[in-house]
Length: 536
Image 1 (cartoon, rainbow, N blue to C red):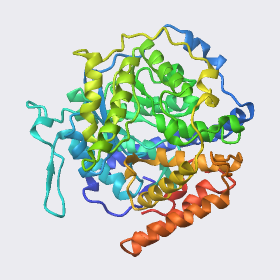
Image 2: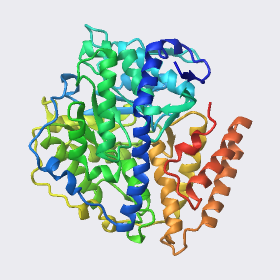
Image 3: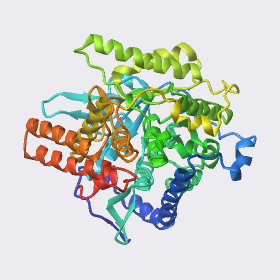
Image 4: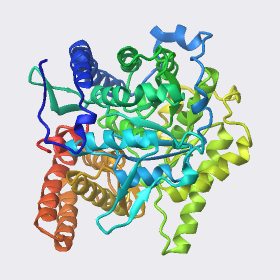
């Protein structure tokens, strides 16, 4: 075998990095690495063409798929009811809290809410193994015990009532701790292969998977690659074809123009699509970052799901999914409840309630929350529409008609670029990167759960505002010098509060990284790529 594991020892790694799993990763690497690389290379050329044209169109070459009369394969019973889904990393305490939250689904995040530190990669797989059996338990250093509560388990099987959907890393990520012929492996394939080989047969016997969420898809050909990988994973684990089911996040602007094609490419392995709102905004900014001032968005807080281009995207998603027999899952409620401030809490919960009621009325079959305390709010909103029905796939949105111009109607977005928005983006970006370097991919900052996607919005907005010569509402231009000055102040404040030398070192590195991804002339595709260099 030419495969080599270079990561340090992690507790119980022998249960995950078995000879069968490593042999499969090596086989899939040889089979798919070059194809993955070609798809990544195609992204750059496609973006440049789109930016130059200032628009995107539905592809005439795939019109027969959009106009055809076909459906995806039936969705398994375990995924029939997805009215509330909770997201979070596979860190053990957060995993237990997610499974105890009363949600229908836990998106076990190996991607944006995680970091690719080796201990997180393998430790996350260990936690997933225990979670699938209901045996996940942990005692904190202070002696507090965490475990799945009895009401969170099926009384007969002892399995978690909540169905688990891991989210592997996107196609752009490599795994530098597992090498084949000295070359890093494809991280998403590593994540999926380890999960299927470890848990696949047992999950299949239970009718509970393996199921996945798929991130960052930009083109139907990328979905087709996942389809082939799933077929090979099923064969390796002895599972019938079509056992694996995925939900694809429509979180790139190009994928919004290819929803039918993505469903079709994965029609034997798909359950639905999700409106990944934060990455979608990042993708829009990134794709049109140099296409002119008409693609400049206001402060992030102003870009709600009801602005015209976001409403067009979310309604098209419901229409497309239900037309093909697939589930439509709504976007993230990132609010973090603060039980010490009842007035602030009530205001934020009211916004979450309004958001989830809007999604349920629009035809969505479920939606995301980031915190256990939001599950009941989302559940109430969807119960009011679904009642005893598991979903509303039968609700066809024939009233929806969306054009390319609708999906790209950025100028109709109300709001403004403000000095507060510039400051907020600097603060979010620096604080998030400091946490990310330390191994935390999901971080509560200013009352919201921030992950890589929201940090991407912050830094990409700053880059675009600078390069487009944007001025804030008070008439002051957003310049590199202005952002550096804000960084100076933010860094000084964080350094002044840092508890030790390790924290100070993380802050200093985060500052350098933020300048690289927000202020350099060349735009980094993903901030997590330079941030990953050299991590253990």
